[in-house]
Length: 532
Ligand code: J2J
Image (cartoon, rainbow, N blue to C red; front, side, top):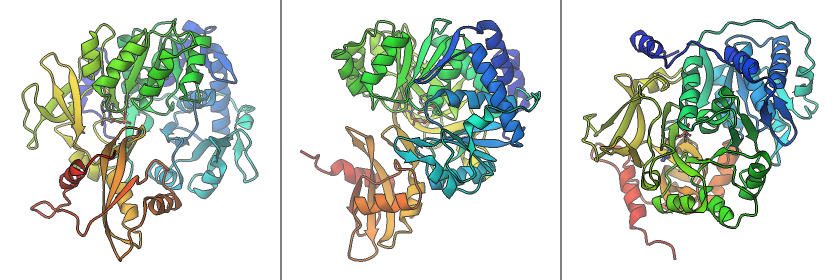
C-alpha cells in the first residue's frame, strides 16, 4: 500500500490526529459506552449498540466459516439498510476489507473491481429498485462467494440469514491502525475506476473531525438518504461520525423529500446530507411541508457545485443551518462552519476540516497562485491518500511531492475559504454520479459507426451536467443518443455512464501538439444557442 512517509505519520500520531484505534476497537468502545442506546434504524429493524455488536459478532463468524479472513477484499453492493453497517463492521472484525461498490454498478464495473481487488465475495440484495442483483452476480463469475441479503435463488449463492446462524468460534484478529480498512471508489479521470485505500487511523480521524465540526453528540440522529457507500454518507460525518458519539443512524432507502421528511418527523432527525441535485425539490417540499422538521439542525449539501441562488433558496426554505460540503473519496473534506454567516454559506465551500490539511492552489506549471486567483487544488494531510490502490502508473502523475492533484479548480479567499469554480480533470459529474470521460470514450470507440469520439460535460438544469458525445462517424450514419445508451448498457456499464447528446463533427479539434482539445469542444458548446 502507498503509506504516508514515516515522518508525516509520526507527526499525525504525535499531534493526536491518529489515535491508534482500529474499527473493531472502535465498535467495542462505543458499545461499552452506549450499549442500550439506539444505533441503527431502517424500515425493518431498530438495533441498539449492543444488538449491533451482537449481529456483527455472528456475521463475522459466518464469514470466517466461508473462509474469509484477514486481508480479503469483499465487494459490498448493498442499499441503505442495516445489513450494510452490520456487514461492514463484521468485515472489520475479521480483518477483511470492504470495497464500496455502488448500487448502480453493473457487469463491467463489478468485474473490474473484483479483478483489481481479487475479491473473494460479493454481497448483494436479491432485488432492489426493480433490478435483480443475482443476475448481475451470476454474470460476474470472478468471485468465490455471493452472499444475498434476501432470497438467494438457486445458483449456489449464500443467504445472509445462513450467515446469521453461524456457529464458528469468535476469532480475534488484530488489525493494525495503519492497515488498510476499506477501499472507496474514485470518481475517476482515466480509463478505469481507481480505488482509494483508507486506513483505520485515517478514516477514524476523518469521522471524528467531521463530527466535531458538525457538533454531533449522543442526541444526534443522522438520516442517511444518499447511498451509504458514498464517502459523504459514510464518514463526513455520516454513519461513522454519528456512531462514534453514540448517536442514532437512520438508513432511508429513498431520496424522495416527502418520504425523508416523514423519517425526519418520526425519528426526530437532527442532521442529514443531500446533493445539489436534490436541493430544489427538497426546498420546494420544505416550503409546502406538512411534516414537522423542527428537530433538524443541519442540512449538509455537497458532492457537486451548489449554485449561489440555489444555496440562498435552500437557506431561506429551511429553518436549520445549511452546510456546504466539498469532499472527495481521496480524502480532503471542506465544510462551512455552523456559525458562518449566511453569505459565506451561500458563496463558499468552507474550509478544510483539519488544521493538518495542507492545501496549495497552483497554475499549469505547479506554481502557487495568490489568494483570490483560480488554480488547481493540491492537497496532502492526515486523511488524504498518498497513492491509489495498485495503480503505480496512475500514481506517477496523480501526485506531486506527496500532494494529491484534486483536478478541481478553486479560488482560495484571504479568509481561507475555498470556492470551487470548475475542474481540470476529465470527468463528467452527472445526476449525482461521477465517471471518467475516457472510460466511456474507450467503449464508444469500439462502436462500428464511430471513427472517433470525445465526451465532454455540458451544464444541465436537471442533471447538473449532461454528457455530450462529439462523434466523427465512420460512415454516413450518425448513431443516436438512444443507440449509444443501449450500446453502453450492453457492454455492462452502469446506467449513469451514458450519452445525453450527440454532436457529429468531421474531425475532432487538436491542440498544437496534436492532443485532443477538449477545451475547444467545450467552447463549441458554449457557442451553441441555448434551447428555448
Ligand atoms: C463542487 N464540487 C464538488 C462541492 C464534491 C463529501 C462530499 C462530497 C464527496 C464527493 C465526498 C463538491 N462543490 N461542494 O467524498 O466526503 C466534486 C469535486 C470533487 C469530487 C469528488 C465527501 N463536492 N465535488 O463528492 O469522490 O470535483 O466525493 O473532487 O464522489 O466531486 O467526488 P467524490
